[in-house]
Image (cartoon, rainbow, N blue to C red; front, side, top):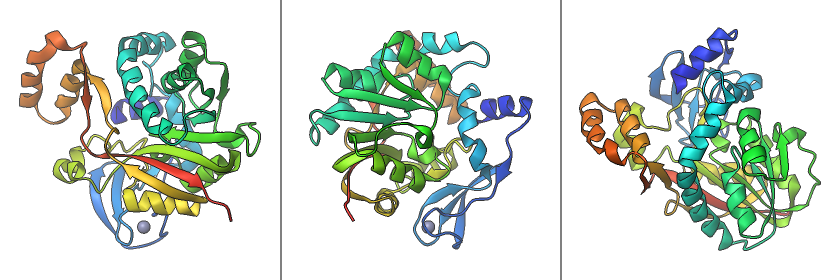
Length: 307
Ligand SMILES: [Zn+2]
């Protein structure tokens, strides 16, 4: 993914890079986790935060999501076909996530930041929530609008979203915070949209997990182009605190995804030719979905803290 997207970017005039430092500590000692030219991933020596430096320059980070990130290089249609094929997996994954949310907030007016193709909002809509979405990629948002027929969608970044302050019961960011140049600023924007005591739900990957330590640089969440931060339970709590939230729950149970056997077979290429060859024996079942939780992702529930 990284290299294909980087090639697309280069053909379109290149993506400028910049140096970055730990979002929590600023300039602190650091140790190298991954060397993947032109990118490097570091661990902050003070707090353990993982961060990519150099990374794609902050003002261009949002651009990569319409560069073939969600779809093939040319045809937006490819994305539709692919989403329809994988819809069952997305719906299963998000039903599980909706169960986690319902424990804290069984109904209400909710906003998903980075709503992508709209599967999660569709699940919540069916459960009776009043759903709203923000998405930076127009290619993928078209699926939410045209196929899933979701009504309240905004194409752009959260800072441009015209939502009324203090009007939402919850804001959700699934696999988004690790992509943001300035996650504290975006979480503060999310906070301002929430009613007092409103909920923030997010999911992100855990750089302190055993899975990451075992896999090293081959960890599937090391996607240097897109993932500029790698949190842990302690650093995500700290980040949320700085944005005005109190963390209520950090959990790994239920944080997995329902993925197709075909996707798993393809993913094995990343690890070894032998594994890939063995995995290909399961090709007849490639359209089956299985729940996979490598225990390296965090689902976090937090509440707006009043000053
Ligand atoms: Zn740090």
